[in-house]
Each structure stands twice: as C-alpha cells, then as structure tokens.
Length: 162
Image (cartoon, rainbow, N blue to C red; front, side, top):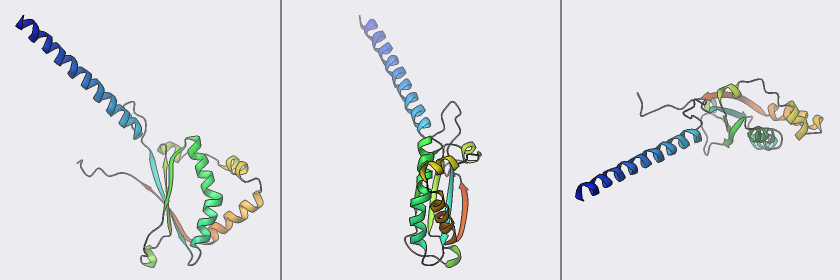
C-alpha cells in the first residue's frame, strides 16, 4: 500500500509541475505579445521622438495649434492601429539655448515598416477638417512659430545584456 501511495504522490507531483510549466509558458507568451514581440516573430514597436523648439514667446501658440490640428490626426492613426501611443512632454526647467527644446512628442508605431510606409493622411485630414483653408493657414502658422524641429528614432538599450 505504501508503494502505491508513493507512486500516486509522484505522479501527482509530476502533473503539478507540468501544469505549472504550462501556466508559466502562457504567462511569458502573453507578456511577449503585450510588448509587441511574440514567439511568432512579430516585429517590435518602433519609437520616434519629435522635438519642437518654438520661437521665444510662442510655445503656447504652438501647443494650441498642435492640439487643435495635429493631435487629432495622430489619435486617428492610433485608432487605425498604425500607432500604439502618442504622448508629449515639456521640460520642467530651462537649459542652454543651443540645447533648448519646448516639446517632445513620442510616437510608438506598431512596427518599423508602418513608421516608414507611404501612408497618406490627406483623407483623414479632409475628414477631420472640412474647412481646409483654415486648417492649412493654421498649420502654416504652427511651423512659422517654430525655431527648430527634429525627429529622432530611438531604440531600447539592454543594460543587463552583453
């Protein structure tokens, strides 16, 4: 009887280990899919930071025009699934003039191919802004108040890897 109980306990232990392994595998697959890089080889997200340096005294005007005319287009692209996230930050304090920027917009694209495709947002813009004359005039002004603008694709650096 003791041998039979040991054998049952051993098989029960093995079954529990197998269930734990299956559960952990599912957890790691879910985490990989969440981060955009699954075991099936889906390409990872592609991140670009867009820096804007407004002329002195025009940062608020730039921000108002950005929020009115450009941000809704970006949000539409998120809804379409082309982008995963759009966010903006501004520095809390000032820097030297040569290193100064007023706004950094970070866009996380679904992948590098989408970030670099020939997507034409003209149809979205016409849908969102039926008054194209006003839209074009305000977009022109948004760039007139800029002193500089640059785009910087970024990548993660694995500090724990070799």
